[in-house]
Each structure stands twice: as C-alpha cells, then as structure tokens.
Image 1: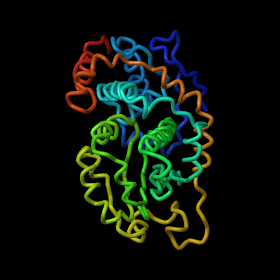
Image 2 (image 1 turned 120 degrees about the horizontal axis):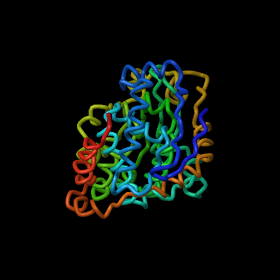
Image 3 (image 1 turned 180 degrees about the vertical axis):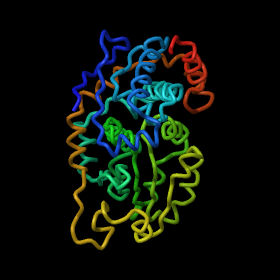
Amino acid sequence: IMTVTYGVEKCPEKFDEYRCSLPEQYRKLAADQLREDDHIRKQAIDQMRQWIAKHPYIRRCRTDAVFLLRFLRQRKFSIPKACEMLERYLALRQTFPHWFQGLDPYEKTMVALGEEEVFHVLGFDAKGQIVILIKSRNFRVDKYDLEDLIRFLHMNMEILSCDEMVQVAGVVLIVDCYEASMAHFTLFRLSEMRNIGPYINHLLPIRCREIHVIRLPKVAASIVDLLFAYVSPKLKHRFFFHKTINEAVSYLGKTLLPTEYTDQTEEPKALTHVYSKRIRESRDELQLLDQMEIDVAKFSSVWSKTGCAPGGIDAGMVGSFRKLDID
C-alpha cells in the first residue's frame, strides 16, 4: 500500500510518487474501459497538477495522485473534463458547506446512522464493481432529515471513491424502498433537488454503473418522476426499477445479497464493517478536504441565476487549460 502524505498546498515542493497497486483484473478493466495505461496515467496526473498550480481561482487543493485519479478515471482520462469536474467539486463543497463540509465519522448523528444499518457495502461482484445496498426503512425520518442523509452518504462516498478498485470498476447501488413511508419521499423537496441535481450529475467523482430501485411504493412514483427531472439523461439509463424481490434477484444474482432477499441459508460476508473501519480511520483525511479552497465569488452570480453548477467555471478555466505549455 502506498503511503501518501496528504496536503492541500497546490504547488508542493515535491509531489507524491504513484505506484500502481491495482490487481490484474482491474488493470485490464482500466485499460479496456478507461483507456488507462502507465504512460497515460502519469501524463494525465502531471498535466492536472500543472493546471491546478496555474489556476488563478484555486487557492488550495489536494494534488496526490489517488485524489486526482478519482476525477481522471470518472472522466475516462479526458483532462479538460476531469479538470471541470474538480472545479465543480471544489465550488459545490464550499457553496453547500452544510452538506459537504465538517464530515466527522465520530459525530453522533453519523455514528447513529452507521449503527442503524442504512448503508450496506455488500462486496465486489463478478465485474469487479462494488455493490451497495441502501435500506430506506432503516432511515428514521422522525429522527433525521435530508441534510443528515446527504452528509452520511457523502461521507461514505468520499472514502469509497478513494479506493482505486472502486474508481476503476465503479458502483452498483441497490435502493430497497420496502416499507418506506411517504415521509421518506417528501424529504426530497424540489427546492433542494434543484441544488442536489448538479451534485448528483457532476460533483461526485465516482462511476455509478447501475442503480436498482426495489419495491418502490405506488404512492411514491409521481414524486420519483419529479426528482427524475434533475437527473442527467446519461444517468437515467442506469436506473432499473424492480417491482418484486424475485425480479431484482434474477437480475442481480444471489451471491452478494443478504439472505432476506434470497433463499440461501448462509449469509454472504459483507464488507460494511471493513469500510466503516476505513471511514473512522480516515477522519483526518475528511477534515483536510475542508481546507481546499476555490474563489467561489467568481461564480456565485452564475450559480444563483441558473440554480445549478457554475457554468462560468467550465468554459473559462478549462478553456485556458489548452493554452498551457504542455507537450
């Protein structure tokens, strides 16, 4: 395992040196799906570091390879797109600090949500993707609100997306809506969704491969339709709705699903505890993310007009990327 010294100095004296520790299956996946090889990877990391160093509005940012690879792999090594995503990520973190900052795995709400088993990391499937199960009914709407949920999920995803196997192969998300009440769905107010839309579509540097929604109550269908308006067309194609458990199991297979979903007698070994431990150990890393800084004032007027991620960012700064003296 590489030892990485995290820092937010955008032009450190010395950058960390990346050594690929991916298993063979994932190296092959990275080459096939993301056009990644040792040369392309090194060149892209170097170019992204130069771009951050010369960026007039980025004041502080992590430049360690694994952090930058989150964006490069998500954008299949298109450097302008990865840079645009990094800008949006930095801007959104600062614009909505109540959602994305001050994440602490030891904070009592985060601990409680972890114990209430809302979020299960089931394991890696045959395609190498990590499979996550969210049980709506375990989220207590009488105790927590949307902000708690977003913070909890974002904290988990921040740490998951530092896992290089997850960066390469992506995530399969299963949302089980069994026994979810109307209150679960009305958590997602439309005013909030306008803000969360760009977050879902652009902020999180993680490859979301499939989203399976199981047993969605009829009463919630119209709300889901409204929420869908804020999801990008590309992501819409990754949604699968299953009316019954059997339908879901026939698609997802029985290997990773808990026995309550299958007729298996032995409970598969989930990775939830492994990742919970990893998140607790990453407390310093989560806190360090809050020290990153971009000059958001530059984009706030665009933001308030469109209600979505700052459009002024992408054209301007990513455009100037092409002017850098890069071979």
